[in-house]
Length: 204
Image (cartoon, rainbow, N blue to C red; front, side, top):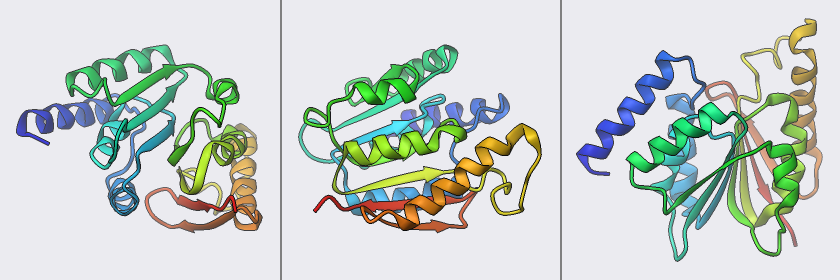
């Protein structure tokens, strides 16, 4: 990445942090980048674009012909910011941003037409179980599913039971249980950042 693009990317990160937009923590990003460097994915699906920061960072690790990141963002204001950021980075030919509700949009994707080497989940915590099933469906054999913030600011670990976040917390606990018990997945959850879950999909 040249110096001009590095400056733009640092500006994107700075503005996101100043505006309290949730983006990948540095420590989580560094870990995921190691996985991407090893995997060298051709196609990445991202659920939860925010301002496009992670998709831009991930694009460096794409390889092969017709390489692509498809990323889905529900909020229109975020979608517009992400679109500008991706255009500023001159990555609009590689990163496709969809402004949609991922719980509905994912179901419209035909796995015969689209499947992915890496799927990154970082959106509404209460919907992670829906995202997981769709991710498995759209994953290639040996694809990696990465879910960020599975500890939900520590709530999943500390027995949190207040009404406001109870549903999301319980669903994330269920997410962790499922990925560890599902025969299609080989999974681990690492105490990095706010909890990163890694699952390798077996379709054999």
